[in-house]
Image (cartoon, rainbow, N blue to C red):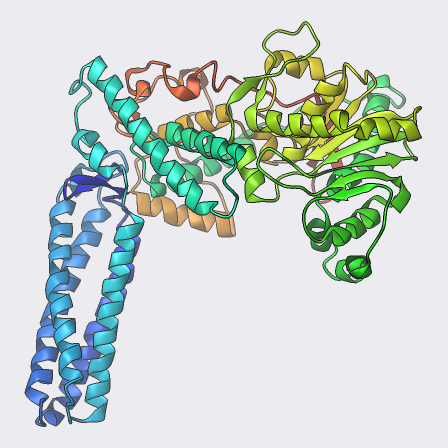
Length: 613
């Protein structure tokens, strides 16, 4: 940390990232050197054959060359272990050592090529010697190929633009030049991220919605990462430190006071009723995922139960559209919900960006028309999730600032058009006019279900929504308050999705920068301790923390060490709040829908639940 500058460009690797790769290469090189030395000492008397002089010269030069490489790698490892993440001063000689190490690859490649040519020239020496030299040639080329692959991995496409300013002082650029540089860098970063996302999602399609989602996702990633001089290992270190800090604070906190109500208390009765509704409607949210989730939940019997449905052809008066393996999906839905075939009005597994699968069914037990929306299960759904800007909802209410997550809002509009414009709800209520409307979903489907209930409330005043693990960054403050009257959200334990939003990610970024700046240990020690803690547990390390005391209100003021982690043209460097992530129009603070029931496991058995209004 920061990213190293070599050959006039920045690379996605820091000078303290070479401890573990260096040790690994050192281990292989030493074994290789010992093997070649043993081969030469034990078999040099058998090299008096035709071509033996060349092979003997090859082994001697290779032994010397490997010794030089081992010494260089050892020096790289020793230097990489010095200093801390925010104090790269003790590692200032690293670039020279890396230039030397890369220069040694040239004689290695030449010598490996000559070795291959000499062996292929029909040498008639002892077969053991020849096989040993063939092995050394193969190992040489494997190491060279691995090095090329590593260079490709740590290549930063924006390194050429960032390098001139990576180590520049904060006063190196005036405000106008800084703004121009940031805009240019953001444009280049967005283009790079869009190319990466298109390659990753090459099979998704090329319609207008997909292109919009690509651009939206690329802009989110470029905005989030473009103003920090972090490498991937820095993020891993920050997450490891934060995890241990949070566990350390949790273990030292007093148990929270539990407020109990006497039996029959209205709030307790309401909570019990809502928990029963959540338990009932959760089956519909799970059914919307189709056969993959059913097989996952029933790994030994699931395939046997729905196998017959997969092979059976059905004719139906109801609509079953979109996707593949529709009969398998329908079989799993029947087993999950316990409903009859005739109870389903519409089942769709049509899956595109901003267009989610959903089902509509008659639930006679609760006397309700249930709309269940599927959650994230495909690349298209992930792109919908990552379209995280805000957009306005046009509702028949007097509410101000009706904003919602763009991707989820677009998906809600799609389901709304199917339900209302295509007459699906009208068909359902023509069969059961006295039933009430209930909308359910999990994860992404929970967000769509919440927005769908808000959009349908003017036409169906009795609508209710039960959302399971809804995303946090969904509704503006006014819509959040409005939704409390008819939406209930269920959150289980430490589930990350109900805590995930652009705002929380921005806060996480600040905390990572802060905890890295405060830490005075080398990166390799933190990674070793972090891996040990994640795998085997134990007592969290007592690192300095910003999560307690009076520092909570000062996260917007970077520490001196924290500034070294920010690019000097970053708005956060100068303590301003002009960062795009802070934009009140594109990424305003968003909230989860409705009232929240938080279920948390208490001890080895039993559950403690809380209802927050």
